[in-house]
Length: 196
Image (cartoon, rainbow, N blue to C red; front, side, top):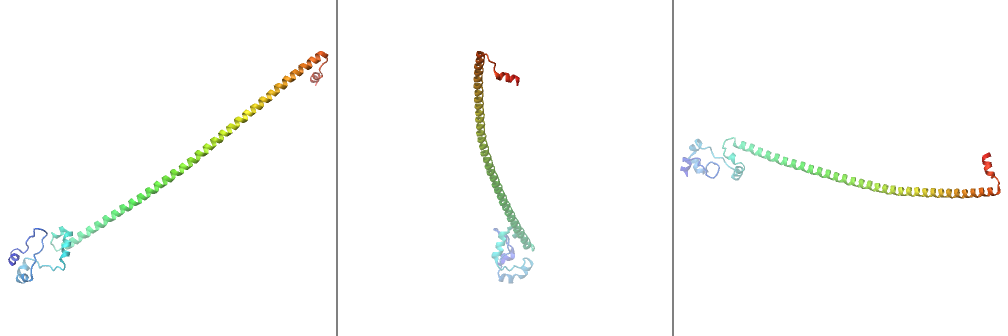
């Protein structure tokens, strides 16, 4: 193992990002000079699972092994978190706007339905009143026709009475004239009419 560490301090791993080779305390004591010149001292990792979890979240930050890599990773994570938060806010905003729009559409629909029902009720009432007026108009027209017919009948009766009286008076006048002719007297009424 010592030869692998001395000959190739950072052997490449085929399956993932590059990590410094695992060393034992005996190797560190033997090759102190070599490690100081070639390999930076290994970092003491308190919990390797956290480091692996961070590497899984940001695979492109593991490729960068500079002293600012941790800062860049934190910045990238902060940007991702901010984008995620903004995305959630946009989704919430769209959802709220959609709810408001749907609520307004429902209320507008309700108002239109209310308006249509009220209009239909008023139009039905108007039609009913018009029908009642037409019925009353027809009744009044019938009454007026009956009155006209009654007046005409009364007028015909009066005319008939007048004609009958005229006929009677003609007969009476003829009889009186015949009586005056027979007696040779002069009628007094005629003289009274002329002298009057």
